[in-house]
Amino acid sequence: MDAIQNMLTRKSVKKYKADTVPKELLDKIIEAGLKAPSGLNKQAPIILAVTDKKVRDELSADNMVRDPFHRADPFYGAPAVLVVLADKSASTYLYDGSLVMENMLLAAHALGLGACWIHRAKETFELPKWKAFLKELGIEGEYEGIGNCIVGYADAEPQEKPRRENRVYYVE
Image (cartoon, rainbow, N blue to C red; front, side, top):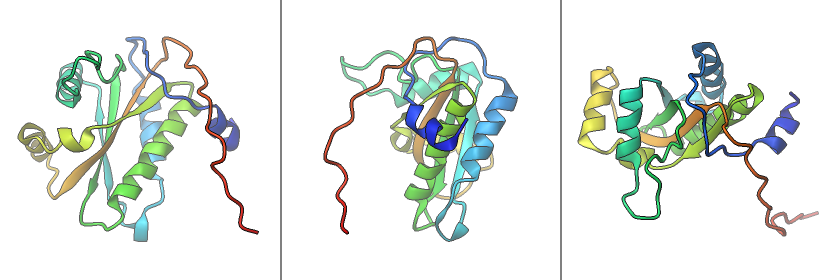
C-alpha cells in the first residue's frame, strides 16, 4: 500500500473480533514502531507486547476510567495490546514514544488489521502493581507509559469522521 494512501485511509477501530493476531504480524508492527525516529537517536521507547488474555484483561481493568460513561473494556475487545513506554531520562521521550505509536498504527493498517491508540498508559504504569510487573520483566529505570496500541481484526468498518477546516496557514 502506498504510504500516503495508508495515512489517508487509516481509522481508529473500536470493535474487534476475538481472533488471535499471528505473532508474525505483531512482530512486523513492532518492528515498524521501533524504526520510528527518536531525539538524538536515544531510542528511549520500549514496547510490551501483551497477548496473554489474563494480563491483557488486568491491564484493561486498571486502564479503565471509573465513571458511568465508559465501557467495560477500554480496549474494545482487541486481543493484543502493544504498550509503549519510554525512558524519561531522554529529553524527547514523550515525542519519541508518540512516533512509535503512530508507526505501529500505520503498520497495523497496512497489514489489514485494525488498531487504535488508547490513553492512560501513563496512569496505569504509575500503579505499584505495574511498576512491579516491569521489574519482574527486568525493565529497570524511570519509564512512563505513552500509549496502548490495541490491535486485532476489525469487527466493524470504522466510519470516516469529518475533519475541521481552517487548520493550515501558509506563510509565503
